[in-house]
Figure 1 (cartoon, rainbow, N blue to C red):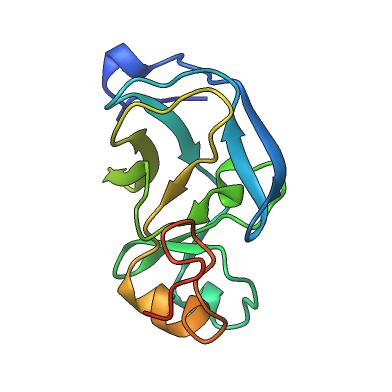
Figure 2: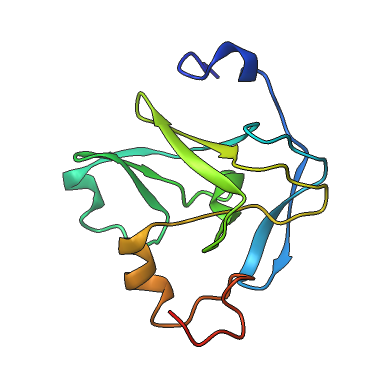
Length: 142
């Protein structure tokens, strides 16, 4: 795999991550501590254009520019299991059309990974069912 766009200090970094049951279904958990600003994982999958997404029925499309999408639905894309949180511990960086996930604070071993899916996705898919992130569980505010 060519990770050229990723800064050199993160190339070859492989985290010990596990998919486990979480409040919002399945989630991705770290089995080791991750330092603030540390590379976590790349969101990967087939690259699709505007014409290609018309028939796609999954919720794993990640837009990298106005005409390019990554279909993260394959189960081998472990990053697809990272759930939304209104108070996330990770953040997304798009570099040359690739989607990288970095920690935005120190994350302890055993912690579920999360990032903010964004307002548009939140309104379309999360708000109608109610947000189940730790910050919102039990809250009536959406």
